[in-house]
Structures are given as structure tokens and as C-alpha cells.
Length: 158
Image 1 (cartoon, one colour):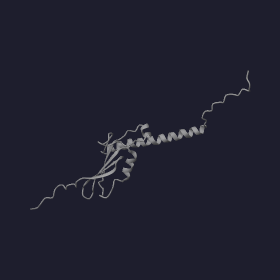
Image 2 (image 1 turned 135 degrees about the vertical axis):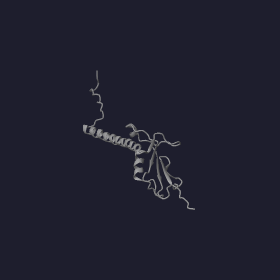
Image 3 (image 1 turned 180 degrees about the horizontal axis):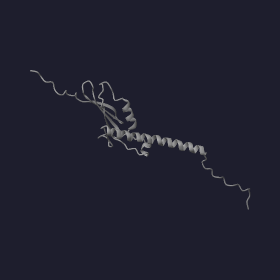
Image 4 (image 1 turned 45 degrees about the horizontal axis):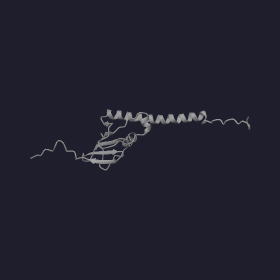
């Protein structure tokens, strides 16, 4: 009936890994998830603090602007895109040659890579209003307003 010896069918081999490898992979995924969740919670806390100190934020971008990309890992853990953040420099210690490059601005830009950030201040030399606009697509631009008028005006002695 059979001409040769019967050979058993080859066993199907599934991917094999040790329990230690499983624990390492699960730990790495949990650390990654925890870091992203922490970053999203920092964003939410910053928005609450921003609202408490009287500054503003908007979920829609300014007219004619597009939102930058939000990391997909932050979207997975529930982050909402913020279109625009308005920050007022309350110290008003901005010198005309200074730029927007401050530690707070770098921190806000890292937390909100998709947002347009407006930093409003006054020039300490002449009282001129200065607005820095930092958008993800166009970079940083500086706008200056008119000098602040002295009030009350000096009375003439005639």
C-alpha cells in the first residue's frame, strides 16, 4: 500500500518568546504611554493656569492659519488641538532688542506644537506695544504698535 516510510507532517512553529521578553515589551509600552499621558496632563494644567491668570486660548486657529500636526500618541491619550494661545508679558520688561526666545516660550512651544502663540508685551523704553506671533507654518514674526501716550498730558504754563 505505501511505498516508503511515513514521514510526519512538519509541525507549525509559532513565534516564540520568553516571559522575560514579554515583561520587557509590556514595560516599555507602559513607560511610553505614561510619558505621553503626563505630557497631555501638563498641557491641560497649563491651559487651566493660563485661564486662571487671565490669558486666553482658542481651540480654533486664527483666520487663514492651519493647525500644525499634533503627535498621534497625544491624540491616542485624548489631547485636543489648541489653535491659538495669547500670552501677556505682565512684567513688561521687554527691551527693543530682545526676542521671543525665552524659557517660557520654548516650554509652551514644546507643549503645543500645533498652536499659533501670541506673546504680547510693552517696550520698556517707549511704551510701544510689541506682539510676537509664532505659528508652526510661518515661524516667528514681530509686530510693533505706536508709542504709548503719556497721561495725563503735561499742562502748559502760560
